[in-house]
Image (cartoon, rainbow, N blue to C red; front, top):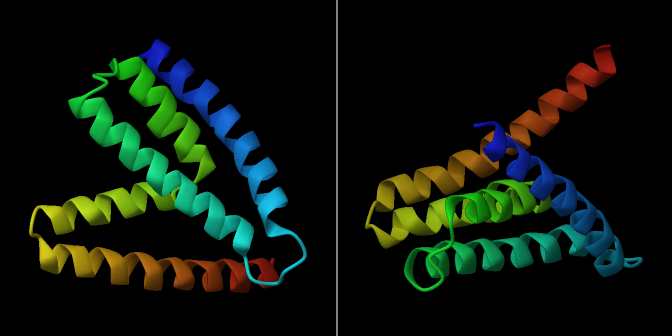
Length: 123
């Protein structure tokens, strides 16, 4: 268990740095959150590639998968995990769960943002 935590922690450290650097470079001076969008798309692609290639072609050991998926990509973007989980629901023909996942994640996360703002103004 400790070794798994170390792999995840090191991956998370690197992923957070990558996220900061890449989102800053991509963002530029536009108001639209291009940096976040770019990072989320890259993360979704990379997580999908590692997951599917890791299962089929690369046969990555669990330590490498923990480092890359939970650690690095977990810190790089949680959108990639949300996207992969949604895609797997769709792929497995769980259409109602797929739609519920999309709607609930988007609506409830926006509500969470709003509530966080409200609570922060009270404190």
